[in-house]
Length: 133
Image (tube, rainbow, N blue to C red; front, side, top):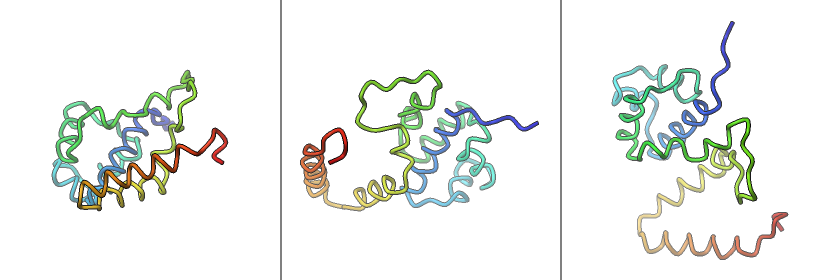
């Protein structure tokens, strides 16, 4: 009987995948950096294999983010999670559109322009009511 992956493991794996893609790395390249096969990286990213703490520490170094990055938003995957009016649902960061937006944002080389883009996004979103209108 196959055990269903834990929702937090799936979330962490999804964050690994998103960050790896944001950095333009293949599963093979990340696997080489970690000393594992690309198949193992696939299993981590799907959440079918849990990432141990020492390996997660190495993943965070390879992907240049703190370990906490992988757990951001994980609370939304817990069965007793009760959002208290949060602006984003937990799945927003897993959407292709979000990943493409973040990738495009970080391709802007000039930090001053990035800051202006962020300001524009905040300005545009401030007019959005709770129904997205």
